[in-house]
Image (cartoon, rainbow, N blue to C red; front, top):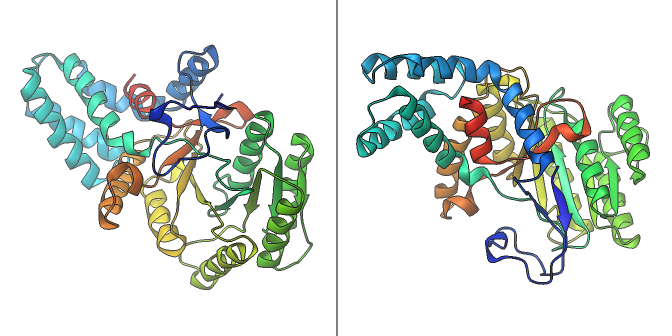
Amino acid sequence: MFSFFKKKTPPPEQVGPATRAAAHEPRVAVDAATPERRSWFDKLRSGLRKTGSSLAQVFTGTQIDDALYEDLESALLLADAGVSATEFLLADLKRRVKEARATDPAAVKSLLIEAITELLQPLQRPLTVGEHSPTVIMVVGVNGAGKTTSIGKLTRHLADGGQKVLLAAADTFRAAAREQLAIWAGRNNVEIVSQEGGDPSAVTFDAVAAGKARGCDVVIADTAGRLPTQLHLMEELRKVKRVIGKAQSGAPHEVLLVIDGNTGQNALAQVKAFDDTLHLTGLIVTKLDGTAKGGVLAAIALWARERGRAVGATVPTGAVPVYFIGVGEQVEDLETFNAREFATALLG
């Protein structure tokens, strides 16, 4: 389970241009050596079993030849890594095999873990709160991706870390969404701003104003599910974002897209569409348990790398990070993303 902590002088590696905050402020951190983290890794490996089994079978042969690479190409495509990411990984893997002078398929498997880890590394970045008061997080996504549930889980972790959180029920079109968010607010003992049938922009404006007045550390706005093809509704999300900026200059500080890992390449299409509209700052990938399409993170990583270069930034700061991934319905089933953990679990 990720945690929040305070340090007067945080280690240099935890302070980067995209996540820098005051030295005394809380930030998200991961200790991979904890029993909780090891338990999480076991869940992740179990959740990715359907994706990983087809990949692992490629390395059961006795020699490294064209057939092995052809089988690996097929396995990566079936895992929804996509054509571009598959070609990228195969080229990188062949280079690594040549440099390492590997002769055993088992060694190739280890080299593939390294290749995937390196590709995914720019997606691994901690979510930082405390640089702004309050830190305003706008959460978007299509219906059914697990958006409201992810907000509830994130709220629990924030509250457990000592953060004062306020929720904004800006999905005013679905009474069930407001009720679901209210249930999470009750479970986590946090406040909520909600209006039955109100305007989403008005709700978020009131919530940010209330967050500032009440001394909240974080304000999280839940928004109505949108299909990227619903252009008039996507435009409404853009309006919500603008209104948040009027309530607090510079806000929202994070625009997070929740995507369903089961949707494979469609998830990548959603990332691109929502980014075009809202300029995403981070992702939450849910429902990775039981999916055979876990390779989509490789496709997202390659897109993020290209996106970072397109805006003239270095890869770590220009890419859209995956802040959290989920492998189940329980609160502890939402965790911070770790590139090496994911790559190892994928092929483990």
